[in-house]
Length: 116
Length: 110
Image 1: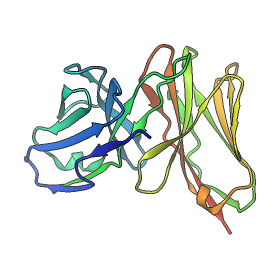
Image 2 (image 1 turned 30 degrees about the vertical axis):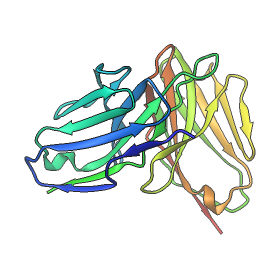
Image 3 (image 1 turned 90 degrees about the vertical axis):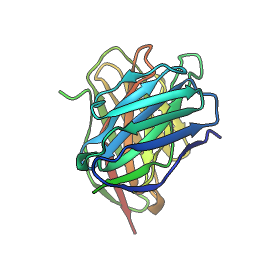
Image 4 (image 1 turned 45 degrees about the horizontal axis):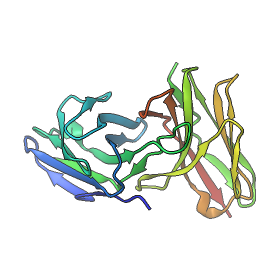
């Protein structure tokens, strides 16, 4: 079974703090993703990575950065947390499978971040 | 038009009912299709990939209609434990990046 873990389930930070969210997957997947999920807005892609040290902006990268120094680990950084970054943050990983190929996503349990 | 659209619901059905959701997509180059299930305050989990010929897994059946650009999920004999939000996801051809719908909420009541 694919396992994706995230460093914290709940986090409370103050405005202006630097925040690190860590994600680790144990299935040697090439692709890793960071999303945020807010009520009524669904899943929104922040950043993704297809290889070590490679990163690409998703739909809402402003205010965030990422780091992928090892294949299994993908970190999301909030340089200066703001209240509008209060959200559920979900990490996911994927790898091609099957002849098509399919890229089924496997999610971590999420980090519920509150910025006060 | 949004890339991937779902009726948010909620769909309120009694136990034992059959319920179906659709998910429409706008990009005709889409190649891979998925259904995920998300329980309240939990992460999405893959329910099933959707194949061109349709596929079935127990009480769940997924279908793809390329001509009309939608996928469907049929749940037979609904259980209380099927209550969740069902997200569809669509990948463009050759892409590993999915576009998710906002989800359809299902509530199964006794």
